[in-house]
Length: 92
Image (cartoon, rainbow, N blue to C red):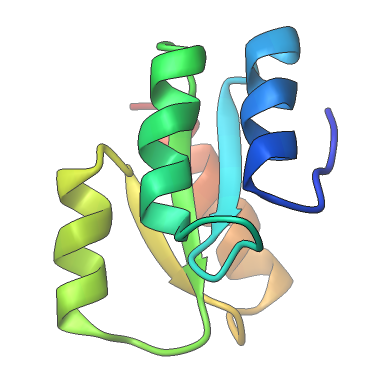
């Protein structure tokens, strides 16, 4: 388990830790969250990415899914909703 402050840190952490799930902010510093998600999946191919965003934006949802994300959540989702989504993604 870990936390990164920016895109490069997330990619490096994913490469080192090979997490099952990566919760990635769409607005991660250092790159777009979409680009960072692509790079995380390349660095740790088994890692499933769930995108976290401030707003529902159809273009961002499509871009996230095209980048290989398995989910898209809003930042104002409840803790239970986030946990449920992570469990759903982890379960396939």
